[in-house]
Image 1: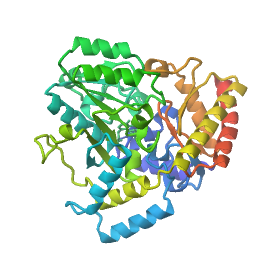
Image 2 (image 1 turned 60 degrees about the vertical axis):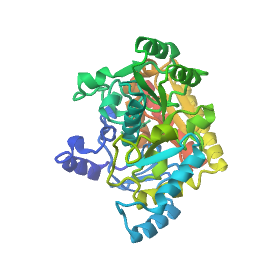
Image 3 (image 1 turned 30 degrees about the vertical axis):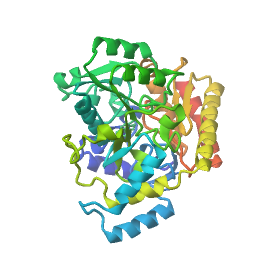
Image 4 (image 1 turned 90 degrees about the horizontal axis):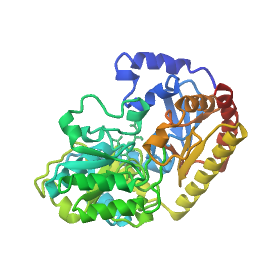
Length: 431
Ligand code: KE4
């Protein structure tokens, strides 16, 4: 890898105008003791930085790019759409076309509203749930991340945990008081909150496959148990499928676990790499959303034709073969990382679910936020730098998911495992 001279120069300039030199904290590489690489272009599974270094990418824009970077067909479709106009601020046929596509894939979403990010989707879903139930409190899970709306920045995962600020300053005690915290994979922690706050809880919001403390799949019966508690207490169940939607299966995690949440939030893949989020669910709940109902939510670029074009392109290509290949390579990567750690005698737990993988640098199983926090983040940082030096670009944080795409080949995975064998030896030497 060539010394990233140009990236460092650009980072210096960016830091004079952008807080931390980036537009989303986790990109600043602060948790991995390196300076962020500035990317010039990407194609398929490969990123190329401004110094000409090429990497096999496992961030993939944090999940949206299930078909890889800049697929030729998508670029063509976007060019054609752009010629017709980039945003109208008025309805276009593409919006209900994508809405119908989403409903076909995720039948629990009887009505869908498009927004421009996962955060907008989750914050709006909570607002509707509060209006529908006329209750104020929500339950979220420690380590889950639902975007940066105030209500969610309480023991939040992803970048909030990476930067050591899981509960953000600026969130008022009044707002935080309405956010109750349960433990992932601990049904009793949910039951006690439901008992203690009977009749006061509007919604339980959960990542059905947690990705923001690193990958933590739900334990057997956990989601069904949470659903049962919600139904018994008139609490709306919100599945935050911003990561798992169209990733775990064409119907998301809910299709795999056979659970129909009252509301679902989507992002990432639904936009094919352009800014799209969506929330939706039961028709009687979504009937409250303005202008049909009184719950206000709006957005200048919601449903814009470029984003809808990218979303339609992405969702029209979710074939069974795609998921079979993603799962096969996901297991290949997970097994290869575990073998590399074993060979170097480095304690490692690899959690995986299809094409979502996280290597946790710890000897104990990772089943919730506390056990995830037990991972050795210095070891992860050493591993990350070793992988980067060998042409592999993992997420710059122990508490994130690695994402595969249709563009990742067996050769890419083998190259990754080879690099991991060397990087693990560097971890072993340092710990
Ligand atoms: P956005 O507002 O970033 O589009 O979506 C927020 C969000 C909501 N729900 C889940 C389950 C999510 O994972 C996210 C965003 N994910 C992070 C990565 N873990 C985005 C990357 C970043 O913050 O830069």
